[in-house]
Amino acid sequence: MMNGLFDLSNQLFWMLVVAVGFPLATIFLGEINLRLRRAKHPLFTPLSNLRNLILPTLTLFLLLSKVMGLARDTVGVRISETLLWIAVIYTTLSIVNVILFEDAQEGTWQANVPKLFLDLSRFFLVLIGTAIVLSSVWQADLGGLLTALGVGSLVIGLALQDSLSNIFSGIALLFERPFKLGDWIQVDDTLGKVVQITWRSVHLQTKSDDIVIVPNSELAGGTLKNHNRPISVYQIKVELGFSYDDPPNKIKQIMIQTALETEGVLAEPPPLVLTSAYADFTINYQVLFYVSDYSQELSVRDRFMTRVWYVAKRYNLNIPYPIAAEYQYQSATPTPKMLADIAKKTLMQIPSLNQFGSEMLDTLSKKGTWLDFARGEFVILEGESLRGLYLIISGIAEILVTDQTGQKQIIGQLETGELFGEKASLICEQISDVCVLAVEDLQVLLLDKSTLQTLLEQSPRLSYEIGEIMELRRRAVNSVLNAA
Image (cartoon, rainbow, N blue to C red; front, side, top):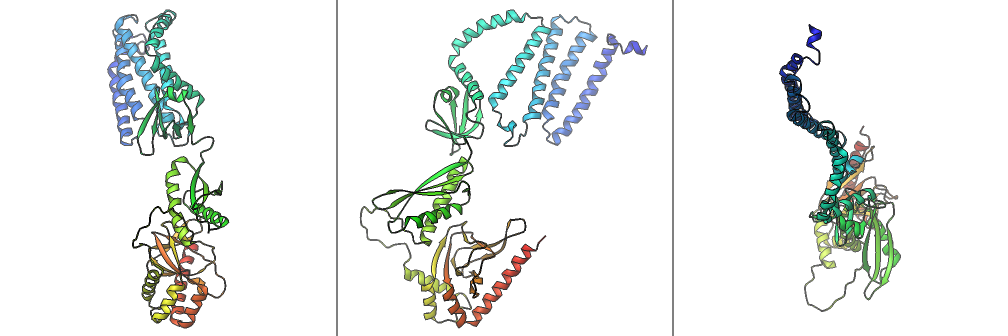
């Protein structure tokens, strides 16, 4: 009797499958889906399709063909089987999409597959599934159907000539692959990053975050410039002009160093400075340096151009400009006397220096060298020979040291009136064991070693305070270096 019950041709067996199996499978898949939804698992959608699409259509097909015993060539059975095939194809595509392309990491082949390629793959899979359904379920003559489709395609092709041109241009671009998702390309006057490739067009995101849609036919028939090919490294060219009084070799050395110290500029390939022209007021230079990707061009150019002003001021480089008219105005640039007064006031804020008379402080403020640093610039680097003692006139700086892992750790912060470079007070040549970084625009007064030695000879108290600062910073450095 049991063998008869489980006979696949037994109507009672299929009644039990439909009456018991369908509810149990629905409950089982519902519990799994609930857990997947709570965990935000990518397989939630395919299993939902399995529960909500395949299971009901399969049950309907079994009910009609096995329980009710309807022949497979009846309309109701064919419709239910067609719906079942549609659900299976749709769920299979969703599973493949989740397994291969869901949450694809940037830089992997999955992330770089164009949307157009995925659409074409889905289209051909659907065509194959449709052919199987028509042939096996509806017993259609595929040869005659293809003939009819050929005639219909000719009419449709004439009516949709422009649209089809874009589609086939997209297919040609797909196989040629002149660009990929994430590349920066220029088409005529439009520059943007490729964010989507569709049947009809390519979507570009401009630097101003606008989306420009370029038809595939224009891309295939026009000139296209890819800023990420053949390599992603991008060269930035900056034109600068300096005075005829500034030696070209000095300019080149300073600009190369400035480029290397700018965040985002690559050390390889190395920066290059070329003397390009002798103009009416300036000697013109081309500064060439490289960034890892074109998307960094704007921000790195801005950082470099900003630093040029501070570097020019520190090294007394002159950037001339033509004057069309003469105006009487009060300059906003501080005069040497104004700078000396500011330095004197700052020196008087330091307890160990206010013991000196006004005349001595005047001398110090005039002998010191004024240096300006942009936010993000290093004033002192580890391993660099110390030029003297630095006094902060305005701004904030951080003291950093490199730990055992190669990471820079902050060990202190400096504000107006504070000193650094204290090891320069020692008689022998001293190398800095820390970095000092400008957190905001920084203005410092540099007292050279001879001036510093004169101060130390006249003020034992200053020597003591510098010694205290030196010891505290030595301990801070050692605590970082000795950390596990």
